[in-house]
Image (cartoon, rainbow, N blue to C red):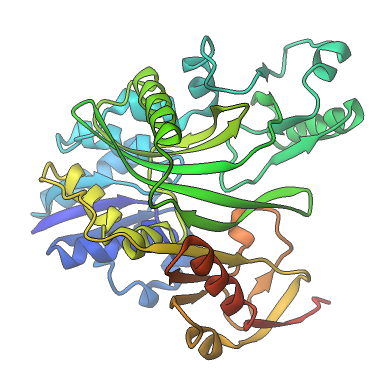
Amino acid sequence: MKTIVFIGALKSGSSREAIGIAQDLGYFTVLITDNQKQIKQRVEYQDVHLMLFCDLSDINKLKTMIQELKLKAFEIKGIMSFVDSHVHTACLLGNIFKVNNFTTNGVYNIENKLLSRECLKNTDYVPQYKIISPSLEYSKAEVVSFLPAIIKSPCSTGSKDVYKVTNYQEFTDYLRQFQKKYPKQSVLLEKYLPGKQYLIEVFVIKGQVHIIAIVEQEIEYLSKHFIVTGYSILINPEASFYYKLTKTVKNIIYLHGLYHGNCHLEMRYFEDNFKLIEINPRISGGGMNQLIYAAFGINLVKEIIKLSLKQDVDLKPKFNKEAFIQYTTLKHEGILEKVTGKRRALRKNGVLKVYLKPRKGNLVYLPKSLGHRYAYVLATGKTQNEALMNAKQAIKELDFKIRKKK
C-alpha cells in the first residue's frame, strides 16, 4: 500500500489540506500526532486513514513506529510535515527511510530562528539584532540603542511570544517573562522596522529559486501583538520592486543552504531594501493555499507533495486574478454561543469562501497569536482594491455571539 506519513497536522489550513490531497492522489495517509484532542475527535478526520499517537520530539519513537508500518506491508513513499518545528524531523526520518527529497541541513537552518539569523549576520538582509542567552550579560545602553525593538522567543510561531518594546522597562519585563517561560532558551532582540510587509512563497528545485506568489500583508497591533488580518496577492508587481525582491530572496535562500524544497519568507520593505523578518520551511498556513489557487490556479500544497515525492511539478499560473483574504479577530473572549451571517457573507460580490474556525461551546480569546483569528473571507475582484473591499464588506456580515466565561 503506497503510503505518505504526516508528522503533525492542524485541524484546518495547509497542513490539513495536504492530507486530503494525498488521499486524492491515491495514497494511504498516516497521521502521527501528539495532540490528544485529535485522537478523541478521530471521526472528524475522515481523510486520515490511520492516526497514531506519539511524542513528536522523540525521533527514536517515531522511527520505531514507521518501521512497524513497513513491517505491516505499508510502502512508505513519503514522510513530510506542514507544521512548524516538525519539518526538519520529517526530513531526518525521510533520510532514515530513504524517501527524503528536501535539503535537510537547509531546512534545519531555516527552522531554527537563531541559526537563521546567524546565517545572515554579515549581510544587510536582516534588521540589527542581538541574541540574549541566559548567561549573557548586557548593558542598558546596549539595549536602549535598539529601541524601538522587537523581542521574541526563537520558538515563537504564529506571532506568539513576539512583542514590541519602546523603553528599557518594557524590555526587562518581557525578558523576565521569557526567562520564566523558557528558562534555558535564548531570546532574540531586533530593531523594529516600519514599512510594508510581504510574504513570499518559494520553491527551490535543484538550486533554482522559483517565486510562486508575493503577498502584501495587512498587520494590526492588537492586544500588544502583531496580527496579520489581511493578505493581498500582487499580480503584476513593479519591475524594479520585483527585481530587487527576487535578488534578495535568492541570496537569502542560498545563505541558508536550501538546494531543494520549499519555504516562505516574511519581509519588510524598509528604506528601499527588503529585510527578512521571518523564514519558515513550509507553505504559510491558514488560507494561503486557497488564496494562491484563487489568484493563479496553482494548488501549491499539491505541488509541494509532488516535489517531496520526486515527481514533476507544475508551477505555471493558469490565470491571473486579483484575490484577497480578510481575517477577523474578536473584541471579547468567552464561550462561543453561535455565529450568524455566513450565508449573507457568501452572497456578497466576489466571495469564494467563508471559513469559520470555532464551534458552538468553544472558548474564544482576544488576539494574542495568529491562532486567535476565528474566521476568514476569500474574495476576488477586477482590481486589487475591489478584491480587498469585497472581502472586507463580506466579513462584516459575521456576528459572533459570545458568553462570558464564569
